[in-house]
Amino acid sequence: MKKEDKQELVNQLHGRFDLAKAAILTDFKGMTVAEVTDLRTELRKASLEYRVVKNTLAIRAAAGTGAEKLSSYFAGTTGLVLGFDDPVTPAKTVVNYAKKQEKLKIKIGMIEGNIADAAMLKAIAALPSREALLSQMAGGFQAPATKMARLLSATVARLGYAMGALKDKKEQAA
Image 1 (cartoon, rainbow, N blue to C red):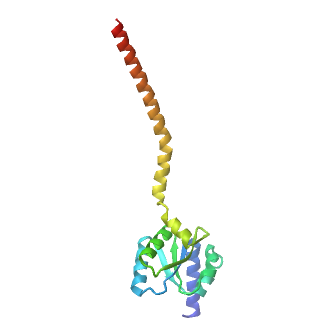
Image 2: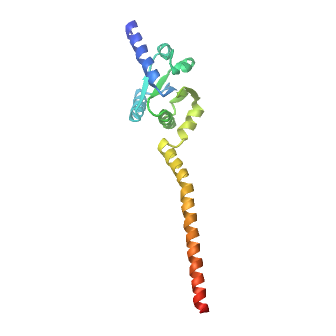
Image 3: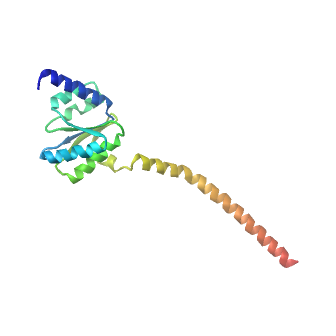
């Protein structure tokens, strides 16, 4: 690779690191080309980017970005997963793929500037989706209002029963 091409790759990757909300480093040693292609397909479906770059170029590209914290982990066979929209999606996708493809190992990750080891990424992947959390929160906000409506309804119903019983009692007395 020519020096100009390397510099172009570093500049391009630097820009991708700046935009990324999540970056996960994987070790794909032992995976076949077909397995890596399958991984790329899965990641593409989730709007994620997967790259295999030389570690020295990745370290240079990460300098001055949030991904600079990952520099010490660029060693050996390293695949780079980048997510630009939802920071949790890369963790979910990579962890789910690693469950079915044991050769793929998760080295380390960075989610919104915070370093996350493999165990933390697995915990993040186990969280419910954003939509599910929002619906749970909405249900939590709705619950007190629903309880109040039931309470008021029950009070009115009891008052109605008491009035009916009083009416029946007066009719029997008369």
